[in-house]
Image (tube, rainbow, N blue to C red; front, top):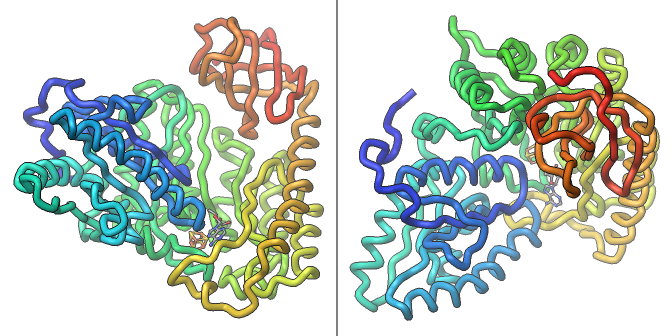
Length: 469
Ligand code: 5AD
Ligand code: SF4
């Protein structure tokens, strides 16, 4: 691991400059945004939760669906007056576009929004201090002439993780990115193009980062990757470890109460990982395993490399190892050529498996992906009707899952102050939001509670007599 951490040797006084980061999209982007703040902290940047008083604004963007990508340009439009206003007063607000839209669109962003100072992809944010310095120089040299923006959308040979400072823990839960990129090339998806080829961090790096987080008070770690269960990290002795083995090693860290991982591909659920769900108590009984569709022809057209029955079999095996396993999934409706009968197969699969929670989307045509060129794109009104029907069913399953928790005793990790005084909020093993009357001293503890009430999307509970951990 390199110690080439940016500018750590001579940091300017902390708090000199304010940084606002807006995060779009997935949990990987949430992790990346925190790491960007970590990288810029030694440069004197502290984060603020409004762009209004910021010296620098980073939009950490998502390209997965058209709506998310377009939102970036409308948000940029709103930032422009802030920059103009600051410049009128002799100052400036530096604007950076990071993440997957930056990777996909590159110079197109500065063509549409010339006031953007920096465009950087998801693999180069360890270079932010250098990019900020270059953008400042470009600004100083422009002297009123056309400004030159700094663009860095390279896929460097050296992984960014080697250059990042140790992450700071913020509260009892943390994300830990262990794998990135994707080689699956589902025909609708931009990820293999924006995040690049699959890459797994070495085991020693992951364990070091996890130990650091736990010693800073973290009780629950969610391992992240675009295909996290394809993890194959280099370990000692010239071997690679799969995700199951990594989870078993993490479970040995004293004080780490809970482990989760997301997001996974059904064909990468190997025997060891499935078995880990049965024999690692710290591994929470909630799995996000996207199926996308219940129709084999559509799965084939999507290049998913599994059938609906393959998915059913994986779930059966998982449930044999962990009978109380709850599931969540992603679904796409209105994929090109999807018939009513094929959509009905998705509905049937959902009725059969039952999901505790899910994400469902209308297919969004993404430039450059094979599905964008497929014939029989589905009219929006048809996709919308299917989405409503699917979401009604998924919502009903979510409420039934929550209702089944009433009267049960379960462990809750208390993570934040509750909505009312004297309350704390937390998460059940199944990721349900739970609020409970409890003293603030229990923040960061796993406590047994009895579920007493159900609201639309959360649960109310009372502390049990048993002790917190
Ligand atoms: N259109 C709609 N949904 C998509 N997803 C990925 N690409 C698209 C697209 N082009 C969804 C998939 C994936 C989730 C992260 O986003 O369901 O699992
Ligand atoms: Fe996209 Fe498919 Fe890779 Fe998931 S597995 S990131 S949906 S290409």
